[in-house]
Image (cartoon, rainbow, N blue to C red; front, top):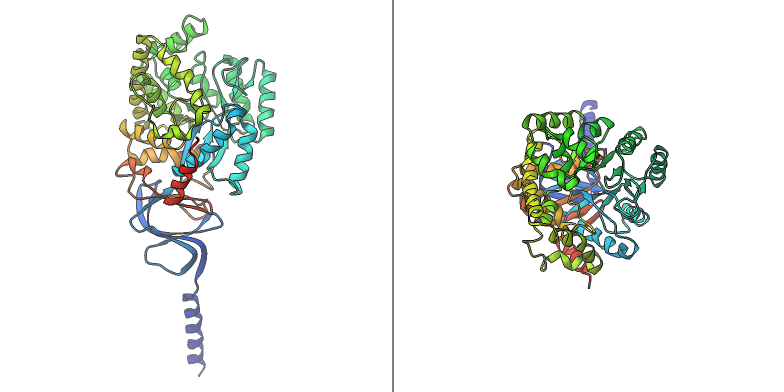
Length: 468
């Protein structure tokens, strides 16, 4: 009698275990999950609670219940996009316009942004807090706060440094603001203070990105500890065999920034470039190409933007800030316009070489006030398209957005992949972006933490973003 009784008890225990059903806030079922680390696509269920991925189960399993379910059959899902170079800026009169941008990012599946310097720090910090607590619709914001530059710098709100003591005080200010990284600009900062700013920021544990004064060499910048180079001008300089000669002319005031471009393009050397690429890789330096805005600004005389769809979301205040770059380009000589277009072509070839060499790239739009016709949200997709058009694979282009963005800012514990424990920032697409990168724009649903935005919700966000 004992053995049958024990057997019956075991059956009861086993059957109870089989009947255990886990409960979640949200179940995304039958999704074609794109794992960006490998490029592999698997049909899986993604189970979410409290804004995080609690479990991932294979197709066919059903030992769970959820408060809500998204049937993603035939859809493709990947981590939410990151725009790794935007600007929230323009002064107090444009606060409302900048806040409006936040909806445009979500409407385009962008769940995180890297704000690379501006003059709206207190507003940005407030928005950042509200977004984190889900009181405001918008992407997670990683911000540098104000830029570091020299005396009388180009951008309003910059922290101006003229002495080593100024550098220390600037970084004290950034620490007190609790910024996510440090951004250094190149309009007025001296050779020595630029390198000192990088070194001091690294001592304090900051990730550092920025432009590079042409009075400084790329080797010096990397050796000082720079983590990220914004734009390709500075990479091109480091790939030129005549960099030292051109740098000396810049230091002596013989030529200026734009005057150096033709000489640097002409001085491009494959052997120098490969050595530079290796140094970038060895030191884990990321590069932000910003191809789309570069192309847009290079062809302002040929492309009519009057009927751009996204102008309706910008408002007159933002549109007026475009005039500076537009007039500067239109007032330039025919030779200068020609050089700008040749530079744009050159950068397209350079970015492919960087990718082929294994240098880590970051997809960033450079969208925001003053950057003519580079629109928040949509421009990130155009940046990805530009990368693919230059020969980068769709998978590698996608990695430059979310995967590399999270690595650069040391946020891989929470972001960068679809895996258990990560924040549930997700984008569901109607078509496979690995087959056609333009499919990143075919958005079915965006999940931002515990917030779910259906296609209809996303359309409503766009509608509500129109500025009369």
